[in-house]
Image 1 (cartoon, rainbow, N blue to C red):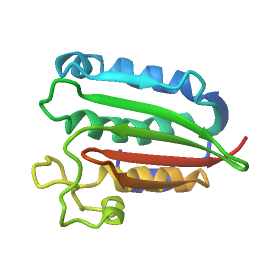
Image 2: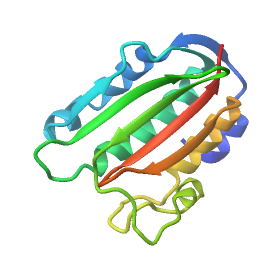
Image 3: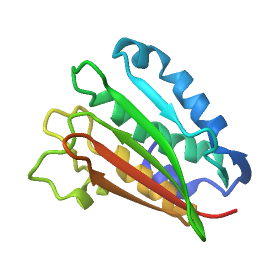
Image 4: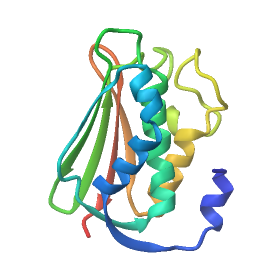
Length: 161
């Protein structure tokens, strides 16, 4: 999906369960998950979101694709998809134990267009910029955190339905 397409799509907001969306996405990545022997853990109740399902699928595909793409060739690659429910918002946190970010990179820069999170990365550095645009279109926010000792967490927050 191109960044400009996010702006041009009309709002088609509906309420839908995020677990259904994640199941669809993980089914799409079944081959890669099996190939890299990735252990996926998903909260049983990610909640319901009101949004454009097509756009949100693209946003989460971009995040999960990065988590899969940057697994380390270690014995136990993992991706955790968690739900954090707070007073006025629900957050989905995707945590991996992959190679993480280049140490010279400011964590906030990974959401800028043409910025790559790692020198070994293929692509043009548009995926997380698209994520940010989609999430902001849904009145949400997205932040990243470096994991200790390795990996990356992406937290996507939405106003409660």
